Amino acid sequence: MKRQFLTIIGLIGVSVMLLSWGGTGHYKINTASGLSFNAQMAQFDVWITTLANHASDADDRKAWDPDEGPKHYIDIDNYPEFVETGRIPQTLDSVIALHGSNFVYDQGILPWATLVTFDSLESCFERLDWAKAVLFASDLGHYVADGHMPLHITRNYNGQYTGNTGIHSRYESTMINTYISQITYPGFDITEIEDVNQYVFNYLYTNYPFVDSVIAADNYAKEIAGNTNSAAYKQALWEKSKSFTIPLFSNASHALTELIYTAWVMAGSPQMSPVFIASNVQQNTSILKQNVPNPVTSSTLIEYNLTENSEILLQVLDLSGQLVATLDNGPKTKGKYIFDWSPIKVKPGIYYLKLKSGRSTDVKKMVVL
Image 1 (tube, helix red, strand yellow):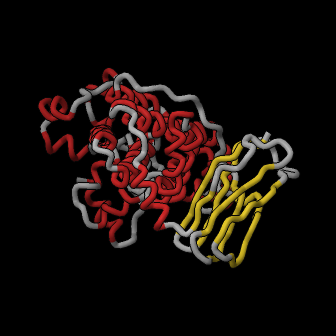
Image 2 (image 1 turned 30 degrees about the horizontal axis):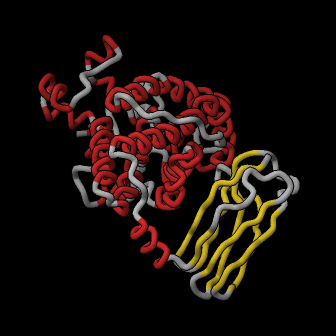
Image 3 (image 1 turned 90 degrees about the vertical axis):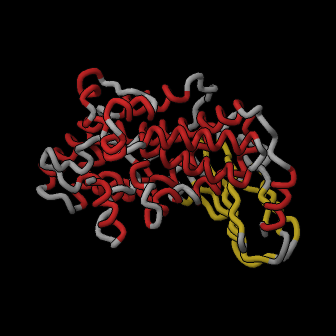
């Protein structure tokens, strides 16, 4: 019942208790899932912008869907068997049979909401419903991110039992918004998941110990700064927590990619519908092509096409979304444009090419050697 109360408070703008990593964090996690797309997933590069733009849809639904709130957390340490063994029954039916529906939903149903969303994504792939598939994938990313935010998997979600009241928003939003540019990581190889249920519960079990780490970081930062609302506090909190916060972000993005990949493989690895692609192209005012060569050593050619006259903005962003270079900007007429870019004084790494024009935003990954 406590989380329902906080949801009501949140609707009148007083609390941000259930926003997980906040809009900034969710956008980052969903966007960075593309870093782990393998060669088989090349067709999914067109999803990256949509995954990012819809990363917080699940949070938005709380305003009108009373069933949405419990999907974002699980107070797993309220289960006596978890306290004793570090595990709980892993199907919704089994845990309800043991504890009753009221208890289970009051503790939150995050893992089962994640699994239902995964099943919905697989079903969309099977029936080639690409428009809905990308939205389910966006929701999946949100729930996966929630499962990698330690304070979404504990009864002590706001530090209220340890004298750390308010740590939830201080950690996930205030600190993250300030230091998001320092959360960088490469993509990692992916594999098909053999047991999706176990996979989801495994990362919950793995991430739960970081609850104590967040509380310890808050205690440290308060001792250093003498308060919880100064730049000194935020810096101390970041310095104490970044060693596990950055991997939590990285692991969330990687888990999302593996889940999307697994759902796609389980559905028969369908190819994205040309009709779906064509309909989206018709709605877009621009098409950004993959730069050539990629990876980039000394220079690369970047091509984009405008389907109508439009204001455009072509940029290079780093993994945290920070601007590296503006390559083109201003009004353009319909047609094809090619830009030759040399990454002078740009550190080796993975970057995003981002083209904004009229109704469209298009993103491509680029590697600088």
